[in-house]
Image (cartoon, rainbow, N blue to C red):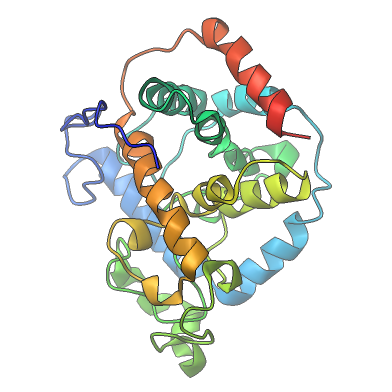
Length: 274
């Protein structure tokens, strides 16, 4: 694996707080906490199964990857304590930071560009789902909610908490079963993963892993749920750790010249997206 230490993470976000500080006193934090309260109550095993069945049909609308990127100009993520800018800025900041440090990993550049495109689920043409069903940290359903999940206290009102089968470490799963076989809270990550798979992309498995689990902070930040991983997951997690540094810390006020970088990303899209 190619490694690079060129990227230096800033210490504070655009609001003057440390990154992913869910306790800092601000109006933004109040919005974020309310988001997680509603998210933790409503994200249930049955809800996720229903959403995966509904959205795996991919029968909403057809558009190009770049058109989808531009559509994200209309989206602001209420779960993010570090960013209040349109999402396309974040996509290009992340992709360009990775491109600078990993110039030969073009699949990772494209992964960075498309990893958040599932947030179009917030828009009317894609169903206009509520924020709690689209963004935020993700976590498994069908097993116990790990204490590392942000604002864990609100799970007390989640209906799944009353199902004994869902409240052990393994829950309904077997140790080492592989994350592919674990039901994870529904949102933009899982939707974009389904889109990429069903469109027969030639992106490597590590790219699909990054797309699907980049918001799974209990796993890649706290080390929770590793007992459910298989060997392929463990290999792909190495790339997710690399990606996450750029995904989190490239959120800044530095503007990207979209028209300048657009031809490069269009060429990548043509190369790996059918």
